[in-house]
Image (cartoon, rainbow, N blue to C red; front, top):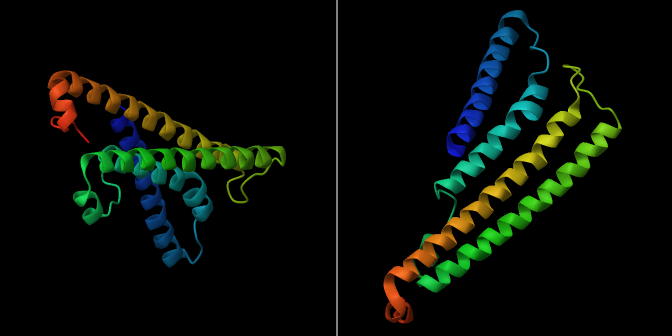
Length: 171
């Protein structure tokens, strides 16, 4: 369900951005002036959910960048350690994005900043950045809990003699 919602959000943002950009090019070519707020809508309203949706989906389907020869050559314990370190670093990075984004949003709101072309409050979209970062952190923590549960279940299935040799463990 979460994957579907994130996919729909990202797809909607992409379609809106593509439609408005193509329309902007057509209007600019025929009339000679751009559509209002093309840059503002793209950068402040549609790009943010598109980037976070793509980032979360790439993590969900395990399509993030890895160095194959390092990961493939590593043993089960090393791969597990790398996955834990990667997860912790990602959570730390997202926490920094959420914190800095929240400070920036509060600053924009305190200054009552509005978009030049749309007249819409800039701070509304600034709160989306920390919100998406917190949602992603929640997803990562949920994913970690599910991974631990699968690991415990696998250890119960294999028994103590298999645990000593490492047989039956997932990485």
